[in-house]
Image (cartoon, rainbow, N blue to C red; front, side):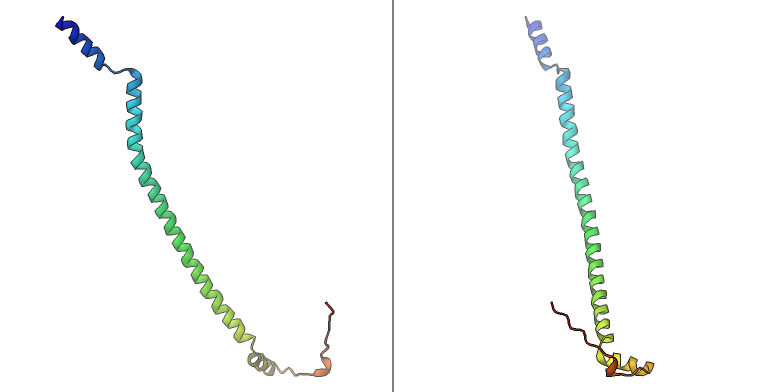
Length: 104
């Protein structure tokens, strides 16, 4: 009788093929989750670095644009225009100027 009880206990501990697949899949998932977590954080970090570089480039371009606007304002001033006119030997003749008025 003790022999029959020992056999029943052995049969109860035997794992089925489906159970092995489930345990293997569960273990694989539990290992994959931290790996995916690290991978996504690395991608996010790389994206943040690229974003900061782009922001830096934008700020540099804005500074350059502001500098160019100031240079345009300086070159378009009446004093600068008058200096260029005098340098080139041009003269102001009021009879050559025509005014056009539009009705809008």
